Image 1: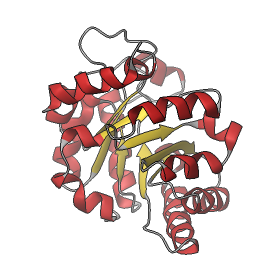
Image 2: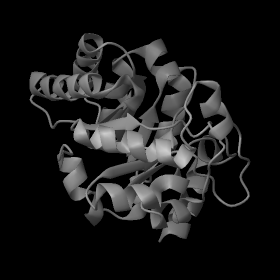
Image 3: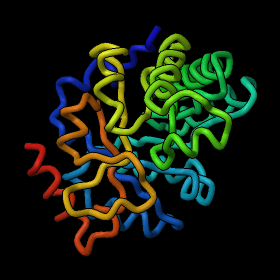
Image 4: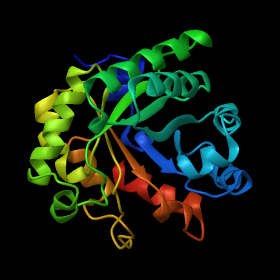
Length: 249
């Protein structure tokens, strides 16, 4: 059964432009802060990934929260249940608004992640963060799944892992925009479906295999989209964000 966080209850009422998560995939805090400061008053969300978090720790989450951003802390937990419960508790106590874990870790691990996230929120008397299950990374395809022993077609694997995430109590999933429509039909109207692999028209694909434009991703059923390099590597990141917001308006 899906965990109904405040975020999951409210996203329907938020304009699409306010559901664009800017991926600050930077190596150093100063670079990420400069980018974030250029987006204050425009973007509502930023994503902190492994590289930045491992370099800077929980302080980087607090830094963005003080600037008024919601923070998607994308650490993709994947370990034994005890470790994931502790990691999720620490991550939630940092003030993060979304956390991720690999669905391949299984039901017990994901349930432990939810417990940890709830406990971490209680530790700071805060709102429980959304918990999201990584289904299949957007850099993967059928061939790369076969290399790790997954025989199901990619779309079937995504839907199977999403169903397990839902049964484990997570708030939603992370998947490519190409699977968003099937997941929306499967998980219902209130599930969070966060889609990386979003590229505005004319952008390079980079290391993404399964992509869509921002508008296509939302039309396909995404609740939130993640956009990184098309904004952060643009000559004017604020102007790049504005172009996406204009498309979505």
